[in-house]
Length: 208
Image 1 (cartoon, one colour):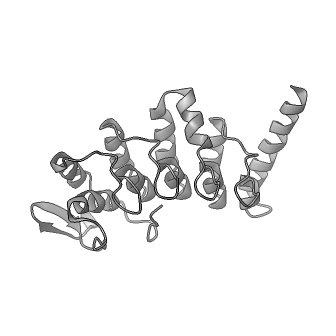
Image 2: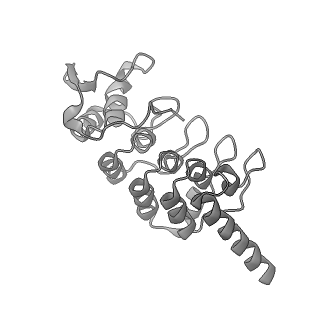
């Protein structure tokens, strides 16, 4: 999973751009470790420049799910940096919501780690299939974390509520034996919500 350098300003007009071989790049993004043919995709995905992303994808002769950076696809990157309009565009173009990066994370992990409620909602809604939604919610990364673990760690209460409403399990433990609730600070609303959901789930299992 690539790591965002903090949340970026979504105001595309404020991004400093330059022209290279007919493609716009955001000059504050380091592209030196990315193959040249993938740089337009990486730059536009990270900067959130929808026009540049459309241009880069139209000119790209590879697969939309090809890893671009650290195993991340362009959909991973747009979720990681919180660019809702770019995520919508990529989904409409057929990007795979279940593609895994080098850490085993899917785009929903990135959206939840950043606390991006609208993007998380879009991904789950776009799946439009209960089985696929369940797979996404249950996907674990290399540390055993589900998307709910990521949302809990960041104490993104609204994202936690969303995932629970779709059926995310609050009792799943990661490789360190931690449930999502245990990743949120004690006394926080996020932890209370998760502990309550976990208790309700245990009660239902007893009654079954």
